[in-house]
Image (cartoon, rainbow, N blue to C red; front, top):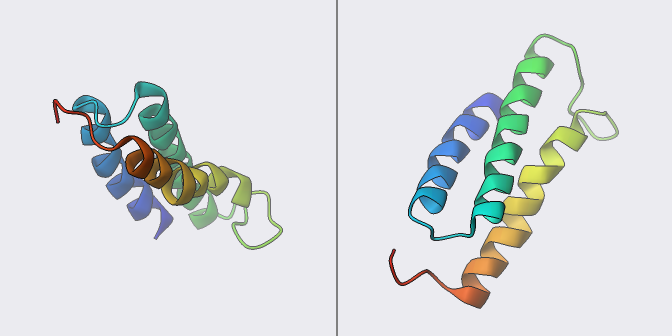
Length: 85
């Protein structure tokens, strides 16, 4: 499921960056996070890393969790959407 989450997350993040709804650094963090999630999923499929609690693969997922649960919602609630969007 992680590769699918990463791939679909890129479809969420790209328009936010393209239409400047989020600042570039924040949207870029989302893109990096979703790429890491996709890679973590592929690595876990082949058994190269574990993604359970206490495994090193969890570090690859923390970035998107931070972005999706904390940073993006706080930014959108605090700053709102850009007028051009």
